[in-house]
Image (cartoon, rainbow, N blue to C red; front, top):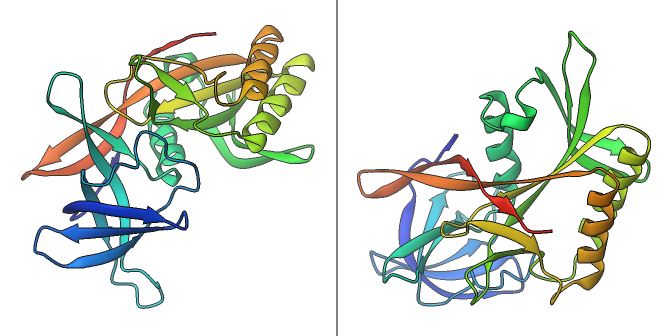
Length: 243
């Protein structure tokens, strides 16, 4: 679990130049927030929806606000939260790993971040001290939910994501344990599959990697609330993977 401190609500006006989002806060001020997501943000960039920003008093920052969450309408007339901050996914997964909540990876007791593998880097290397077992782990955040109600990755063509898949596949061929974990950072998604209709090369790469022994897991987030505002985010449950 990771905690939010003092999130401030508003309404999304627009996202532009990838890194900027204009938001009208509930007190009427219009501010420009940092958008920590370089992807297409398909299905989660919805002007008019309620969003939550984290404030910063760091004088060295150009923007005092960071866009964290968006509230999206669900199929039953309610709302579902999505985390648009891609930098949070690794922290959420890391916290769950240390808490033993990712059952297939619960036996590891040490963790290294940003592990170099040939000409790429993978997010984590997990090791079990007593046995010497290890697993290479790459995390991908999923927020795309299409009209069929299913979750997909990627939301746009991802050459970098394909490169990570190929690195995992190469490790698996060498007899290493290699794992891809989809961090499903949007409520309302109960299964995840490759977005063949968006990036057929990534979909083919995922099938090839799985065929060579790369394990593919998916876990969904949930959000805790206090005093009417989101206060924490954490991995809550496994979801199915469609290959």
